[in-house]
Image 1 (tube, helix red, strand yellow):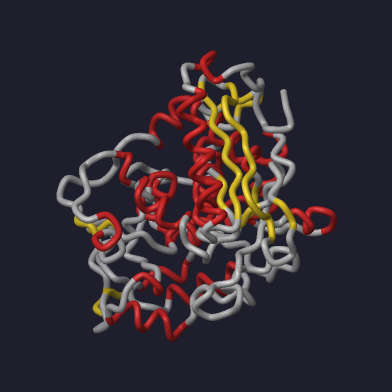
Image 2 (cartoon, rainbow, N blue to C red; image 1 turned 30 degrees about the horizontal axis):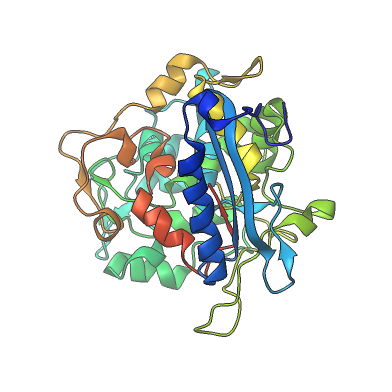
Length: 358
């Protein structure tokens, strides 16, 4: 074991990778840092359970002239979603959470959902499966200007000074974009799922993920805050030349009351690599089993109905999507697969990031 989360191969070719081609990757990241396209990045590449490449580039905090280190802590944004989804599947394995059950069985606020700006009563029931696969009818207000999204924007459903319970009460009062089960729409579904985990487990989401995922897997720097000594390792965004200031970011060193299951966690590249390796191993890592192999296989299969549509957030980002779990159609893996390589590259080249961990 190394400080990088997994054993390190002596040479890349031991796991079938080319050192020469990996050097191109290094050159590209260095160029992007020099051109101010990104402040910095941590890149880990593993294959066959061994790390073949581990490099830190640029600045953890460009303005403070703090160099990037391999143990930098990143705001992992929507890569929080797989953590929350695994938490839900742990409860499902234990028989405490029914994937096919209506969300209203756990969150009464969703008993009378409406659809569209006209607030027509929903004909379909939103299920836990809908939350896992982003077919709940929920949306993200920032990813479009539809009538429903404008209503959502006015309600500020992602305000940091709220609890998860307050967030759910607010969301349940807003209209859905689509009838549940009919349309894939990248959304706050996983935030609602996080509240389901809280209600079913009797624990806060942060506490449950820490107890059932992070501590068993040794993810020491993963959670919903980076306080104490860890605060000095947080990667920060660089100044946006268009505004002359840093873009707004969640304050993870002094977090609010809401542990956002859809985008509020922090982690290191090494920690997240261990989490991903657990999934690749079928739910087990270093003798610790988090999920059963059949559960992971279920998560990695396509669960969208044949007549499912793609919503407003999908089309401008991805265009026409193929029917494949790779494109976010898999139960509980939507956020793992929601970004195409091109989209990830565009995000990495934006000034509005706090570094990049790949």
